Image (cartoon, rainbow, N blue to C red; front, top):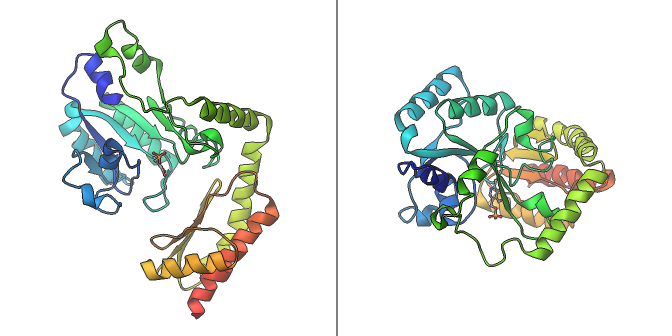
Length: 303
Ligand SMILES: Cc1ncc(COP(=O)(O)O)c(C=O)c1O
């Protein structure tokens, strides 16, 4: 959509994207090409995928000026910058601050690029506000939604654009139309689930539930910070992460088994034990999860 936006405007040079190391945007061809090529899981397709500009998320004055210099050189071939705002999930549950996000957005706009927020994982309250971009006070040109759009009950995704992008596709010329769509696009059952979930989002105290989960995750996971095998504990909205020093596959398998033995389904990977519980989880249920994390992480030390 971003590439065609420029074509519809008569600019045919822009077919590249800027994305970031540790990003994960999905498993279709374009999305794979935007995900981290080294730390991700798409090595097998390296030669098959289009090449993109994949950069570090800038975090200091120096790295921001490097980021700007890079964009200065390449921006005329770039359709947009895509980022998972505030939390890069599958690529390592890595957090960056709203200030960093706002600055990336500012520089992106300075070069006239589309700013694309992939809120598939962060959207609908996961990071604490309705959308992660809101915390940075920015409004993306395009936003990708999925997962919680249906409350996680059915598969459905949506790509939102600002009015300007929408209008470049609004035309009687067939070549301006977005000729993209899978068989089950706008599937009525999925849309009904989304509408029901969105209604619940408005009528039930979702943001308060998320705040309560955040507080509880902080309280119950933070003590793990003092364990020798724990590298970091971080919490953002309804996301709790315990990062271990040991990231071997064997250890992850052992943890997974320990969790299952305790009747818990968590999926540790790459040294990360994390939970992104449903917002309707009760306080007792959440304690069951954090207790299991405590037990299994401590048990690793002793095993
Ligand atoms: C940030 C982000 N973008 C995209 C995707 C891919 O979504 P889907 O599997 O619905 O294509 C995911 C899935 O984990 C994700 O976390």
